[in-house]
Amino acid sequence: MYSLKYQLLFSSVIAVIGGVIAAFYFSVSILLTMLIVILSVGVSYSILILFVYRPIQRYHAVIQSQSEKEPIQRVMIESSDEFLHLSDVLNTMLESFRKDIIRMKKLESVRTEFLANVSHELRTPIFTTQGLIETLLNGAIDDKKVNREFLRKALVNTERLNTLLGELIDISLIESGELKLRFRFFDVISFLKDTVNEMQTAAEQRKITLRLDGDTSQPIDVYGDKDRLRQVLVNLINNAVKYSEPKNSVTVTYNNQRDFVEISVRDTGIGIAPQHLPRIFERFYRVDRDRSREVGGTGLGLAIAKHIVEAHEAEFKVVSEVGVGSTFTFWIHKQP
Ligand code: ADP
Image (cartoon, rainbow, N blue to C red; front, top):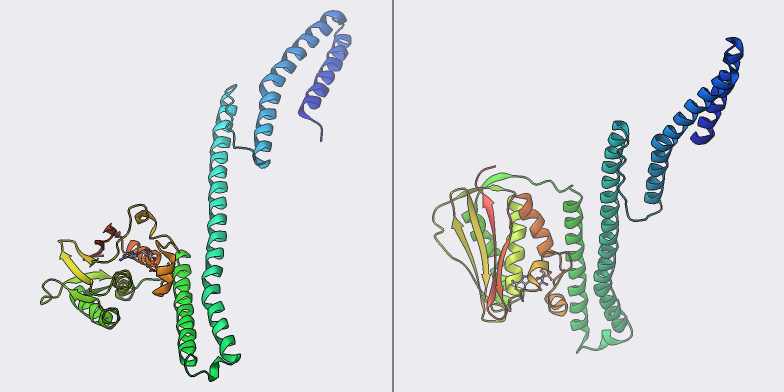
């Protein structure tokens, strides 16, 4: 295949030869015919070079620069309607190409960061358990003062591993869109009573008072996936308990609106500083990593809760002050 420029040149030469043959055949002055043919061929050649060949070369340069990973350029050739249209189409393509590249780069870095976090989180309980078992095998098993304590710590770490894996499975199901929610009508009042009751032992263990406020005599129907919403509420109560000091209190309240029921979990705990608030729903984000680990946190609870609440077409509202406490609020709709 030859360049368009040479193909044009070749057609011009053919035209000149044709002109000469025609001049002979019709016995017209050969000089005049040659002049007319060369003039018209020259004009057409220049027009084609200027309005067809050059624009194509510009398209070519722009497209090539995209593949060479240079910043994406736009191209606008207005020499004819066809090129104007082609420029529009090409620019739209380049724009979506640019968006795809940005999305892919972002996904790639999110994936890398996620993998690094997961390996780090898994490594801690595995190494701790390994160390405890090694110490026991090296003789500590016969030391009555520490053997049971080491075994208990190993158990706590395997439990942490189990929680972490469960939450990792949840988050991957949610983010891949494979988690199917089972929406049903249910009574939110008995849901609140049951969940608060379930969490009493955990609160008592940390000497925290946990109670449900408000009138609980009348049922109120809401529409949602009860099990997943329980997971959200358990996480909020768990956090409220975990990030409070003994003798603090945790109160669950509800606010019955016309179309939805708002649920709040309020604590009088350590609170969250304003600069951390926008990030606490991110995977693995913790305000105080050591404290979270110490109380068995994985850094995934709120990320999962946020996904579940958003799947119910609702959101979280958080109000918090360091040393005063935090209130987490979400709502459940009454109708589909
Ligand atoms: P974790 O498993 O670490 O508790 P979460 O995703 O549930 O992870 O919460 C993320 C972070 O938000 C926690 O590590 C903690 O720093 C902060 N946080 C969540 N709830 C509260 C709360 N009620 N009071 C203070 N800090 C909180």
